[in-house]
Length: 173
Image (cartoon, rainbow, N blue to C red; front, side, top):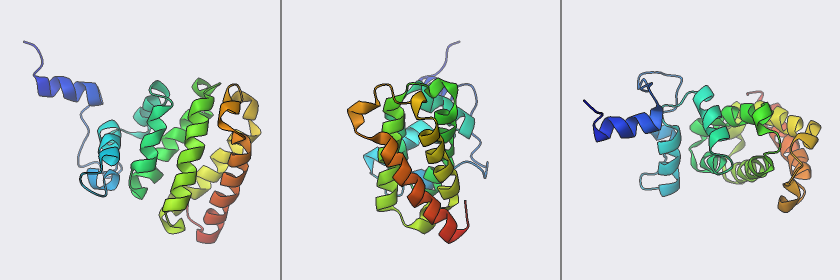
């Protein structure tokens, strides 16, 4: 007997592992979608709801660079959780020459700085600052093709400064 349409769509979204809705470590729908009807947040929810950080890291690599855009539309709790997966992807060998992802991530981080309060970003600020330093220090890994996006390395220098400032002022993350 074959899979029902529901089970097939579920398998496409989550693979063989069904998310545990009682798992307190995973962001809930309300953490991803802050306003019902927000189509961008709903798309992020379809892509990330129920994913562990390891699964999200694979998703970032498999659907680069467009997958990073979802981080811009999530609520701050989900963003602070899933940005760690984006960071792990950037630090992996799989991200070598993925200048598109690195440039898109810089844009997403700039959006979050503009739209979110430092308190909302504080849980991940230290890790984001360290990731920005990683990009700057390992720029040759990403520079192939990056010139299409302007001076991305300089943007990461500024992002590191701003996230480090949040980290030092809040002492969290």
